[in-house]
Image 1 (cartoon, helix red, strand yellow):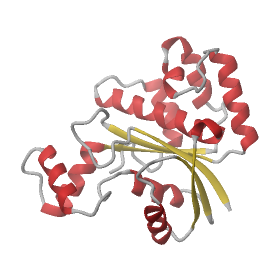
Image 2: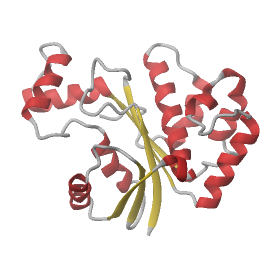
Image 3: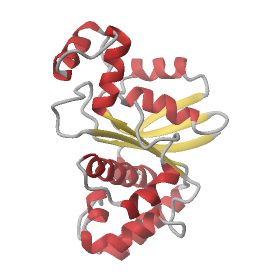
Image 4: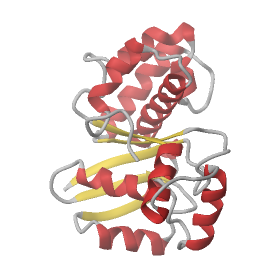
Length: 223
């Protein structure tokens, strides 16, 4: 059994365009409780913020860049223990439009509303295929501990287990009480922010190079 802790960044459900974020990121880490606790403690000793719960933005501050490079680097805590998926939401929606209608001939916002109205609830949410891909990234039977998401209802979890027979269980937890999920949150938030900066013509090549070994698949973008 492989247990992985997962969290996302940039989730806005089925609203894929016109929202707050342009990229959806989903990260999974395979760490013990002790390893994750040690990682969070080390970050606290480096950053020294009084915040109760650390988030990705703490590592993304310019004054903490050295901490970010350590976290993602070969001497950091994630080496061989983490994966992250990145979804360009516009590309993801465009691929769904082409599959449904053959071509994109109008504003994606209109297609977004149309597909949400036509399809079953949650069909456009990138979270669900991300969880299926997360299972596929690890060998053997997989147990997932995931940060709480309202869209991950009991019915949806049963459906995910049917679609991914190797998914043994999916348990929702509060990230504040599980350091493994906090580490996944750091990675997802960092990857999303860096990916959005690249989309906006401001690539951070040093950080992108450190992220690439963790990005699932051959390309930076999925969808």
